[in-house]
Image (tube, rainbow over all chains, first blue to last red; front, side, top):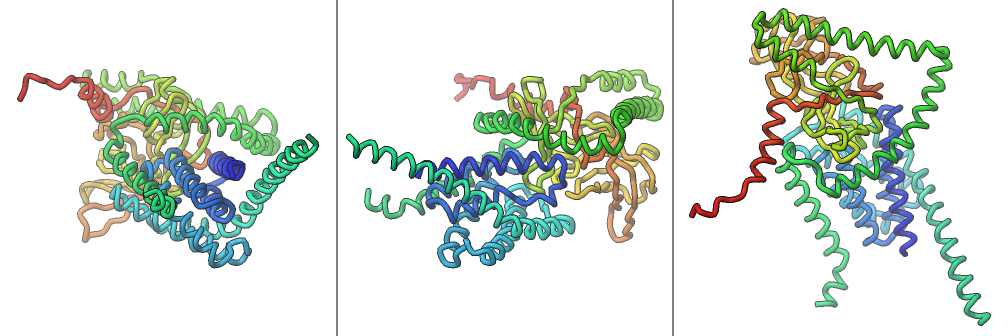
Length: 178
Length: 297
């Protein structure tokens, strides 16, 4: 359980750093929201309590690194996680098509949420023609990248879990020989 | 009670986190522009920015290898150096022209000279905003180098934005392109004043206060200094189109920014706050230092 939590936290931090660094050479429109995808992956892979904490923490990190109000993305990521969690129980988000459609829709919902929260709390209306275009492109990119991100996080989980099982097996073996 | 908490553990956790987020938002909105970052934000800045710097260097190195190969070894470096020198010369020329055009008053010239002498601190850009809705950059200078919120950030071509948060070793600067950005500007030729706003995309909008103000395509827009945030005469952009609508009180011009925001690698922080920012930040600190007067009922 602890290893799973550590794995998802590491994945979230990696996504955070990677996304922010690649923007140096690529325009933001062409970069998928890796942090959002890790939050959706956590809905499939970890327990709800762990996922809520990760979603909240990573949201606060995005707020600090992006210039939004502190708590803005934390709130959005919490709701994304909850929606993803319940959707995955009903529609099995491990299936590629289900995941693709879900990520497409949730990315657009996330964009709408960002605009609404900014309007409510800052009075700033962030939407314009350019932003609609960006939201659409990003939703498509997120959908395409979701499978890769989920597979990567799953592989990392499997690697850690296998190590965890090996450690437990060796301890049980050591206990049996005594 | 324990059974209740155990049974509703997850909804309670969700509720607590949502309330925490809402409280953070409201609190941050109230203290925005008045205080520096909290210690948690400082920690995250100081943790993430150096890691980003480590990752950004090889990424840039790969991009630079291609550029250097195509542009031939040495020529690109020389070109970059010449561009920097030209930008500096252009900036000085603009400022001197401003001094002549604005007034022959010696006091004003002295004020502008003080503006010229404000120290500029170079800083590398190590990351951009994670969210495309908020246009900002992360730079690897912080309070340890005397970089503080409210300081102007300049580039080779002109004004880049404003520092909005800083920790010991890193800062975040909101770009001119951000939809929440608004800078007092003026047409350098006709002195028509207005507000330059970011549109989120690569262009800026210059909203003129008076409908009949003189502005045409090709005009250079500079900071007017009237907002008390940025110094006067910093290049903002060039007019590419003017939209005049007879039914509105103001008309709007679209600007092409002087700075190439897509290739922002190095910026300069003006290590002096404008009077408005000085009032907002330093006045708040002075007021909070005052002890309450207990003799008053």
